[in-house]
Length: 362
Image 1: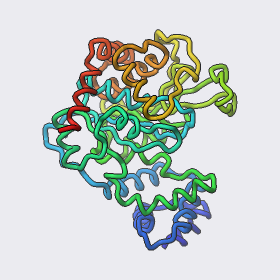
Image 2: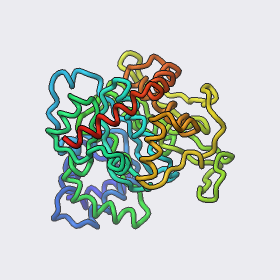
Image 3: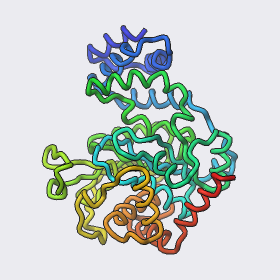
Image 4: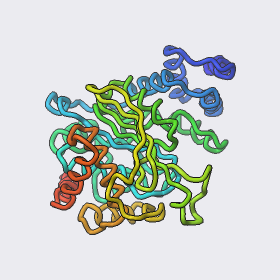
């Protein structure tokens, strides 16, 4: 069934919703050869995925995930996910994971969805595990954590078992130097179906399309961001420079950020953010770089303890400000910045992390 769909994509024709469903059934079928699946994924990428195709794939794949049974009180709260698509290859420390912990400490219910590292040394699963937070929870355990601790990590392989039959095809695509739709589907597949999301993407032109997809999937409050790193901030030979700079899948403290955001009460808006509006310290990309999971866990602890007051803290405060705004806990980015700083400085952030570590041992 994939061969005629490949031919259709090669002619530049998009897939209808029922064709996406048929393609998903083939992709998760272990009897279909991996090279044929790879040919399909590459044809879709080369044609260019439409917003409708991305949304259809997200719905179909999300329906195949294991679903946590959330009680009415939990479901009635704003549930936030803070996640990056990855792919910027700049090896910053785990900003989104740190922000998720700060948001939870500020009273937000956080359902963090993620995996181990693919394009960096330490993914969200890796650093949380190094911190001592239990990551491999069952759907029942995850629902309890969200109810009792207002934070849970949804480890993607645990909740998306069908993906094991797609992995060989994705590996073939990577070997051919081809990205696929799966490079940015991850943030759209949170099994808790969050109502609020802060999503980072590695290219500014992706902000609006991914924002539109989030909105179509039923997210009530969303922000998709991409931050610039000017060439002047790339002061290390380890960073390659393309088109005069690079891009972070986070809000940038080093350059202008592109933002696409929507809120139930205000509709969709695209804008840019100048970091000069915030009390930032001088920094380069080197100041935001992380390492392996253990080193990044040490960075997270020092930030949450308030021991690291340098540029890494600025990056956390700026992105936490956005997370708190999206979750409805702050009225503006400035308010969110101040609240995030207060949560760290009063010890609430370390208390939340300690609570989560202790919960994993019971």
